[in-house]
Length: 265
Image (cartoon, rainbow, N blue to C red; front, side):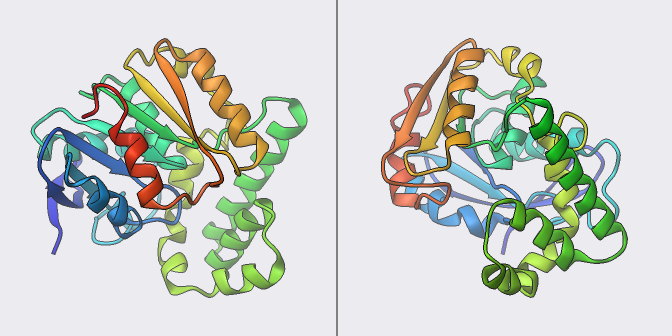
């Protein structure tokens, strides 16, 4: 059974802690719960005291219901609560939009001595790309407002280039349908609704903690372009490439890279 810790607004945040060593929190991306990153937590448990948690509205955490206007601030507070459960300071690994949460938390001044960003899905900043992402995000919010979670999932995944036969299974998957109402949290964290998902340059420049940006060698080009841009903007950053792997790199590949980042271990 997971433990819970209250966030700043009283919302219970479910989390599990494994291992012993320096504190490390893992933050999952869209559609994911703590179950998604449990294999990575277990792979790191021989080197770290690792917390993996359900972001609000998902799994055993509270916060089900309408997504608030201050959703980004709530996500940062939730992560801060989990860091508190580890003693008040922890390095943070974020995958996909979870990396967006981690980046915003570091920019907000949370006690994060080291940061690992694994393929945050920021996109290009040209007018056409920004407009396309804004339209997608608005379509997803509309579908959820009209209680059409399957359509919201389909709209997001179709934009990722998945074929119809794969989409059909996803839009009927109970696990994905259960967390679909939390999609606006990810859209807001990544700036999809307002900035069209472009890299938030000012926010990135403000993050002074040592940061490792991880990208897959087999991932789409935009992930690699984003990684390069982040390393350029961050005051103290380096890049690590997972040769032959894409956005879903397995725990046994990711864990050694995280563990080898100086200062994390």
